[in-house]
Image 1 (cartoon, one colour):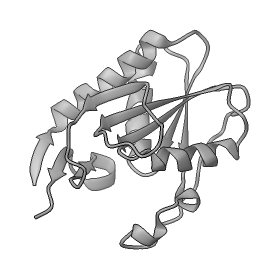
Image 2: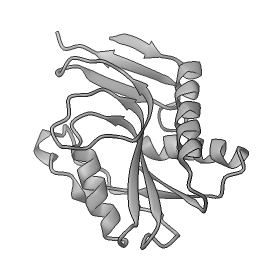
Image 3: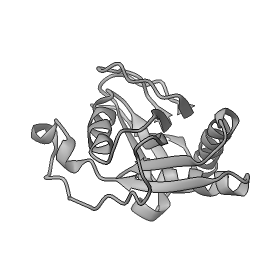
Amino acid sequence: MNSVLDAAQIQAANERLADQIWETQEGGVIHLVGIRSRGDEVAERVFELLRRKGAQVRLGILDISLYRDDYEHLSSNPTLQSSEIDFPVDGAHIVLVDDVIFTGRTIRAALDALFDYGRPAKVDLAVLIDRGHRELPVEPRFVGKHLPTERMDRVDVSLQRTDGKESVEIITPQ
C-alpha cells in the first residue's frame, strides 16, 4: 500500500477542480451532480468552494447502483441509496462529479441514470483522481489530480465524512 495524497493534497485537488469549473463557467447556474459514494462528497466540497467564489451553483446527488454492469465482479451487493436532484435536468449544463475515473464504466452508468431525470443541454465530467486505463471513450473535462497507475493497481480514496479519514492510496497486488 502506497499513500499518495494526504488531506492537504486532497484539498488542493478539490480547489483545482473548483478553479477549472469556475474558469470555464459560461454564466448562469452551475449544476453539480455527485455520484454516490464519495463522488457526492467531492461534489459537496466543490460546491462550497464555488459558492465562496460567488458562483450560482446547485447540487444534486445520484445513486447509480441499479445502472452498474459489474455486479458479478463486486464483493458484496451494492447498497441502494436515494438520488437527490431537486432541479430540472432538462436543458441544464450538468457537471457530473466522481472521486476516481478508471475504465469509464461508472460514468456510463451515471449517464444512464442521469438521463432518466431528463435531457441535459450538456454534461461535463469532473473527477478528483484520473488514473487512466479507460475501456470506454469517456474523458473528464476537469481533473483534480492525474495519478499514473498500473492496470491491476487499486486506488482507494478515503474521505472524512464517508470513511473517517482523508487519504488516497495505491494498492498494488502481490
